[in-house]
Each structure stands twice: as structure tokens, then as C-alpha cells.
Length: 171
Image (cartoon, rainbow, N blue to C red):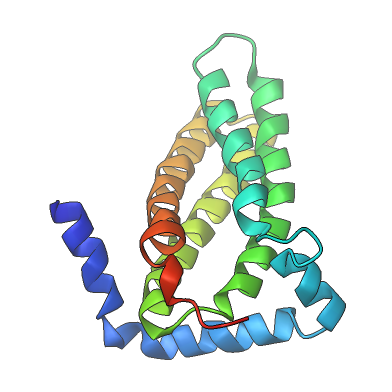
């Protein structure tokens, strides 16, 4: 319960509002073309695409982490790390489209969600660089740190999708 209390406290953390405003402007810029916005919001499908798209980088990075425990799987783990990086960008863009519809309380949680996921993405990028440079063990540890950070981002994403779902503004 303490974890939920801490997450709930983010909703009231007005000090996040300036960052939330900047993220709102980024969202507006990224989703300015109407056809792109419609696609990123999932209108042609009738539901949001962000929850579907995030499965790709999550699955790739978690799978790479499991492969790191097995012998002679370094190449496959590196490929999966790269796949995660490539698929994270569309997932993030779809998340930015959804951000436009959040109220102030949900946006505060989203700021920390985006921050955790950005740190995770950066860790995975450094992990891939290290793996490809022959520093495999170092890349594995950095990838693990990225995956742990991704878990925090996912927890906050769950808060947004399930506990704060009713707080979105009308589309």
C-alpha cells in the first residue's frame, strides 16, 4: 500500500506542472499533423495503440535480459536490444498522442512515467553500444539497469491506464 500511496502523491505534486506543460507542447508538436495524430491515437482501430506498441520494446528488452543468463547468446541479446530501441520510438510517439488527453493530475504521473522510460531507453542504447564494442558484460549490466527502470515506468503506465483512466479529457 505504501507504493500506491507514493504513486498517488505524484498526482498532487504541482512542482511537476512546469515539466508537464513542456511535455504538452512536445506532444502538440509531435502530433500536429492530423492524420499522424489519428493514427497514433488509434482512431482507425477504435482504441489506443500505445498499450499495444509498448509490448514490443518491453518484450525485446526483457528477452535480451533473459538471454544474458545463457551461454553463447550474446548476438541474439544484442539484436533484441536493438529491436527494442527501434520499436520504442513509435511506442513513445503514441504515448505522446495519448498525453494530450490527460488531465493535470494524470499528467504529473505521466511526467515521471516518461522520465523513467527515457532513462530506460538511454540505458538500452548504451547497453547496445557496449555490447557491440566487445564490452558485453558491461552492456548486460547496463541493460539490466534499463530494464529495472522500465519496470518503474511500466508501473506508472499502469497507474495511468487503470487507476487514472477516467480522468482523461474528452477526445
